[in-house]
Length: 193
Image (cartoon, rainbow, N blue to C red; front, top):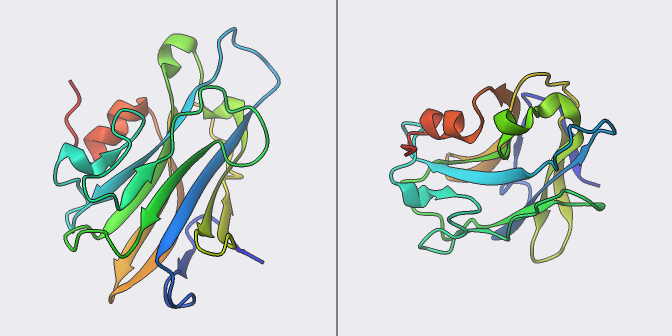
């Protein structure tokens, strides 16, 4: 059984799972019944941050426009444009053994593409979750449902992996942002043109 987290909860990842090397981070969501006349395109991203909480370069921002870190340690498995179907809508693979030593945390986010133009926000999204699966065994280790009702936010920091005393842990964050992907980029030190 996976550990079901609530907002703000932190849990050991590698200490309780010795030998854990590679994980799959699955993010999923459903769009509520009422229709804004436009498809919802939610996008998962990963921000690889140093000790200052910022990405050292743009290469540490993994998203639909940059699917893989140069080391191969973080790899986005591709953009899902509709979010339809069961299970994970987007997946990000992380090889914990290959993460550069200057990277102390990896934040996982979900944003709504073109939210302002389409007049969409996370109040219109339900059943959003993040889960962490041991890639070698397929066993789900952690599951966090964003039960929170966001109303005007267009971006959410879902959770983050972080290194503490040489071990990887996971923090269930679930905090919303207004301003979509641009706001998140600013928060993590990525300049947006």
